Image (cartoon, rainbow, N blue to C red; front, side, top):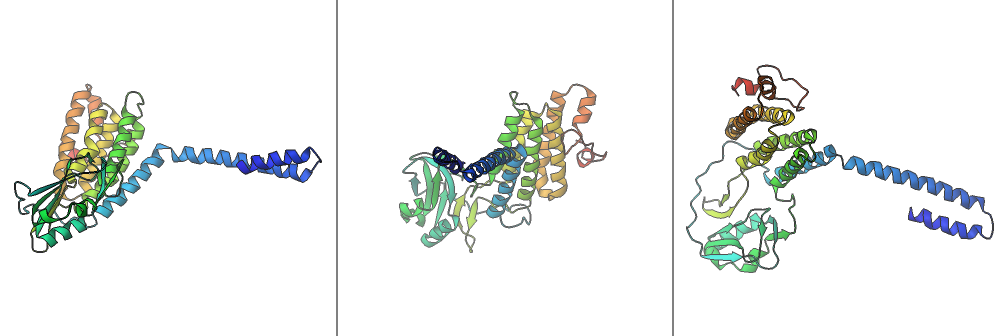
Length: 324
């Protein structure tokens, strides 16, 4: 467009001296192409800003970060029982420099440092936490107290806002925030919230099938070396469902879509993932009883619907068989 403008101005200066039909033709063609490019850009931008496009990209990114952070499939319930850490650290490393959000931490190097010093390193914040100056960053136990402070600081990346590099809950957070904005009285767009739940369902299913390791990392001999806080299954479920249920429990679309999601996850995930889902299903039923007065509305709200309101689930669906 800038080239078209400059060419047209140059052609105008030339036309003051003589008439060149070729220059006029080229200027007209460039003007038409510029208008076409402008309209295409507007159409492309509008399509990229549609809620379904944004949410699909969030879901894809969320799937990728869950797969990268939890590469191993789940083989069963997480086994607790790591050796307990000492009650008090021998040394505390505080954050220095500039306050910021933890973007990533090099866990492999932390394990190597802990093994090399025959000690235990606890990374105090969680990826995605805001850390201000002088906040505790590392608790060092045993031989790890001799590790140089700069060596530890070099293993943590900080930034001004959260990213999805090592933060598997961030994609969930964005999708939930979009749903909450859509459910606000000022916007009142439950269909967009349903689209957000669609992406939350696929991310939750993947997280439920992955090995969500414990916070404790052991060496080959079974000795506790590093403690790094990571979200567990209950954290993912609470993040994906609780706020949407609280804000949208008076909307038929939302309660029906949440029920359909819970029913789908109960059918597709192993049994040891069920308790957190059944708890959310029980809370959803209590919200329905509180918000819907007429028996007909209550009956309709208790039917799972993948579209929110539009698909009638067959009788005998999983939530109904569970007596929910």
